[in-house]
Structures are given as C-alpha cells and as structure tokens.
Image 1: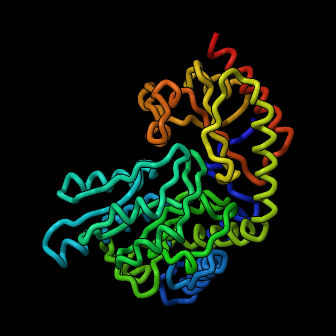
Image 2: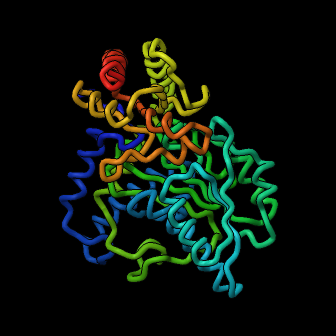
Length: 377
C-alpha cells in the first residue's frame, strides 16, 4: 500500500506511539491531587509545554481539546455568544468560501440565527487579500476567521497581513492552522492572531487530540459546561496520553521541518512531472502552496472511479470532492476557485509526508496514469 493522504491524517509516528503507550499506562486522573494523579498531570503538562515550545507560545495560551473541529467551533460559537450577551443582538462575521466545514458549518448555523456573515470569494488560486478583508469589515464585525493553509489546495494565506487589518479595527482574528505544523513555519505571536486551531494527527500525533491557541488577555467563554479543566474553557478529564504523545510528535516534526519541506517539495515536483502527460491535466494548487499537497484535475475522468481504481492499484489518495451516499458532490473549495462541477468531480488530492519515498511517488504516478485510462474507458 502506498499512502498519499497525509493531509487527511499523518500516521502516528513511532516516537508518538511509544510516548502514548507510556503515558496511557499511568493510572491517575490528571485532576487528582494524589501521587498517581500528579504523575499523570506532569505528563500532560509536559506534552502541552512541548507543543507550546514548538509553536513559540506560552503554554498557558494553549487549550487542549479533541482537535481542529472542536477548536473552530469553540471560537466561532464562543466569540459570537459573548458578543450577543454583551450587546443583546447578533453581529457580523467574516470568513471565506474555502474554509474547512468545521468553520463553514457553525458560520452557516449563526447565519440562520440572525448573524450577518460575509463569505469572501477567493482568486483562482484560493487567495484572499487584505484589501478584500478591509472592505468586508463593519462596525459590528465580531470575528474574522480565515484559514492559514487550505486543506485541499495547500494555498497559504498572508496571515500576518490579514490579521493586521482586523487588529486595526479591533476585531479578533482566528486562523485554522491545522495543516501548517511540521511543514510550514509558524509565528503566532508575530502573526498577531487572536486564536488558532491545531490537530495533532496532522503532524504524526494521535487522532482526537488538538489545541486551541488563545492570545493572552483574550476573553473566550466555554461552549461546553462541566468541570474546571483547561482553565475552565474546556471541561472534561484531561487526555494525558494524547497530549503527551502530541507534544513528542510535534517536537520531532518541528526539529526536521526545514528538511521535510525540501523533501516534500522534491516529491511533489517529481510527481507532477510524471503525470504531466495526462491529456488536459490541470494543476490546481499555486506553485508556492504547501508542498505537502498536489491537487490535480483529470478532465473527462470520473473522480469516484479514479479513487476506486487507485485503491485497486494500492494507492491511497483522496478526492477533491466529498462522497456522500455514493454520490460525488463537487468540492466547495474547487468550485469557489472557478472549476466547473464536472472538473471538480474529476479532481484528486495527493498529499505527501516525511516518510514518503521517491519510489512510492513514481509508483503512484504510474497508477494515476493507469487509473485515468481505466476510468475514461
């Protein structure tokens, strides 16, 4: 099996798995005051500290949670709830047409509850400009939420410039940065963002673990109620093993990030060169997108058939569209950048990792050529 779906999830690294098993063997609840509980607490806080060091932030600014979806929902629903409670009415939210569904779904739910929501339209490469954002802001804008690196295209936004526009108007800025760690440089303090969300399984940590960065001095209410864990922002028994393993995985990923970036860049270029002969092939990601992602359209092919044929040939990739109940729905990201629905359905995302080899890329390129021939036939 050739695994080229790292944007969906990075397989857990050996270091992370060993750390997880070590911490999972600890019997205590990290909130307990006895020795067993404090031993678990030490591991949990070590994991948080490792993540904070890798991200260049104070560990006290990180809320451990279940991942990017929870973090995105927490920011959008928490900030807007606080706004309404303070003013007695809904306000305005700015986001984009190419966000992950973890942002789009709560944004649309808020719109149904009376919030005004502006969805910025991207250019043909999935980018947004500070000028666009400045024009969209209103006196009652409560939040801006724009991803840092897109999960389908790999397009990287100019987050510092966008966040500066929001800051100049006193508007909190949130970025879904799930796809960045271990591949792209991060500087949350320098970027000036108010909130940022992360998922450990994107950098080789365990699934179901994530972190929400909350800038010091920022008020954010909880959206779930219960105990006082995570500074009262996210109740529930701490995931000692998950947080510790996430920290171990990110420490390693950031230590080799520059090397990984160069490796991924070579792999993607090699892959694109080998599939360039496919008739009408379209490359959707911009040249300076995250090298982790290659988004290609094979006109005239059926995306679902392509995926099935690739799977038969031993290659794991993903579609540029979601499959629901056997019906391929065109990707909202691809249609937002201008692809026709037929082309969006004929789009695949190949995503590479540190462990991906040139031989695997060569085999995957050959498999795509064969799969395209079968699906067109």
